[in-house]
Image 1 (cartoon, rainbow, N blue to C red):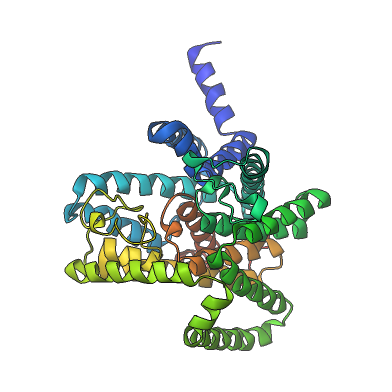
Image 2 (cartoon, rainbow, N blue to C red; image 1 turned 90 degrees about the horizontal axis):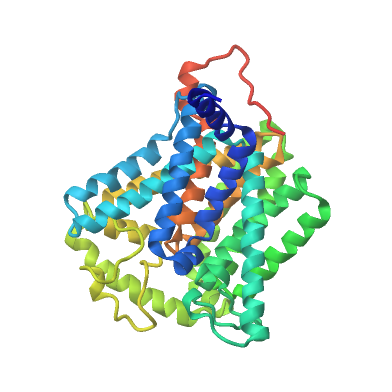
Length: 433
């Protein structure tokens, strides 16, 4: 076989549907298990994995460029936020750190866009389902070994070995809140798998039990509180999907008003809610941390200190917060406050527009599309947004990749730019089965 023919065979293999499926799963898996991978093989090894994934996706995108609808490829809100993070290099107080952090953000952005472009929604659900099943099983096995068989702490993975006390568990994610957030995304994913009959019923039910057990055993007040709201939203969405189109707008506004009332009541009775979730100690830690961050924001309120993603505690201004009672923080424990600190008021507005547009689009699609698979992005985005109030994980790695995937899918399915280029006489929303 000649070298040219050999090259064509390799490209054909890399662009095949089976390889793209495997590559999508590997990409989501690398993001979901990033903490465990880094702690096991180090940053250099993890960067190597990201580099290989990016190179493979570039080849796949080039070889399959004819299949991609390039009009309205990326949502403008996503480009604005990422663009502002990129140009923050010029005024950053720690330029080399920002340069590396921006490259890290761009890597996961490109991976998320690539996955969203070449996978339809049901394929995304299957890919996320396979990855989250593996991650939760690996977490449970690790906790059984550490907490029951050996009764030791696995320090390099931050596993406390508390299974004999029924939690809190951290799994392979390094923190109980992160395990709880992943378990919430997993529950939404496994429910859609069951409803669409994408997996055998026994596997789907077992996966759902595993995710629910992981959520409970994580003892994460952040995830437990968000679960109540997501469950209520899922029930509301279930009702909306069965409402006639003529009545749907009325009920949408009714739900919006109800959500505002619930938000106000939650703020008024926040102390009681914190007590019910047994999260007083965690709430005190966050309030203390937020006060420290709030003191730093006015110093560069418009443009921010410069993008850094996960905090680097050896640089200013983060070095001044490392001694906070309760442990050195790796973030502001609030994605919106974190972005305000790093990217200023402009970055905060960009993030708010990004998540708001993504959620509204996904919610509208979920309410009007026939296939239940369209409810997955809406519920996952709601999970990410709610937990962002007490965690910053949406800004990095798995959280950011998932946000990008859902944002791109929602934008491509309900894009105002496509509306200007495609104006059918009888516009109908396509159905995905």
